[in-house]
Length: 121
Image (cartoon, rainbow, N blue to C red):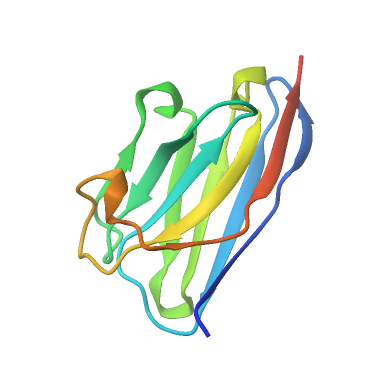
């Protein structure tokens, strides 16, 4: 059974840090990504990392604050978040693609259940 399981969410004050983890099981994925959905809003792309880990992609609002990484052999992907802001509050979803690298948010075919990140001001 294909499964993506996120962990590491929580409540943090503005300016704080969190690290999200995603464990993939069932098969080996190529490109992995993180998305987020704030209350009343659509799910938005946050970051992606290619199969080899040599290429990373970020939405503009998180560049310089978030870092995506992976351990390919362990089917793990991480999102290190620094200098968190209240507007980062959302449910964060791990996503998986069978493409070598990232082209668009539509690449992703498998999704986790999400983990809540709440940033207080």
